[in-house]
Image (cartoon, rainbow, N blue to C red; front, side):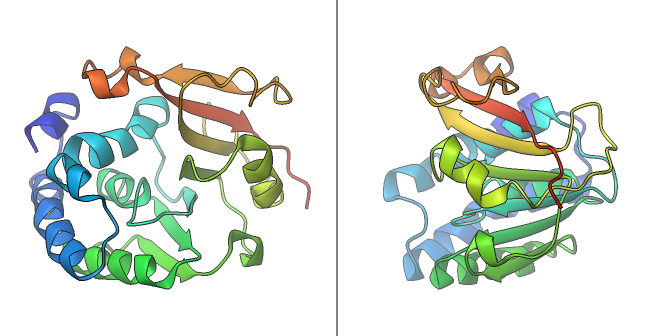
Length: 209
């Protein structure tokens, strides 16, 4: 929890309480349904919570913004961002039912009012959003194909509506066909070695609807 306060010093009492609860909730649910690796559960705040909040260093979501988290797994990056931005609406989607069950229980345990979940494939989601977030669930080309028609036309932020994607490693080849993509290096925001090759990719999407 200390590491979250280090980079986000202006949290409210309620947010501190919610972030503090994450370890207990995930440890408890991980014993029943394994959604976070054993190794990672010990470093939950570094490897999952703070990593998810890397998106918040690139984009501060305004109230009433709509965000879809695709392939949320155990709720990352969506749950930590929903705690940080309580007035932003998050829709967490995953095709694996047991993962969504854990997310539902964690969301309930935290008392989050700004999260809804769907067990299903992203292609089946009919709504549109300001931003689509995810943590390395597929190559950008595949991910872009899944979500390209799911972005609102109306802009509210300085960054254009589109994808905010947590990725690692050398992305030159993967992003070759996406010249409008901007890469933000997480070591510019976080000093821990874990973030050495981690990035947030912003890809604006033109509305196709």
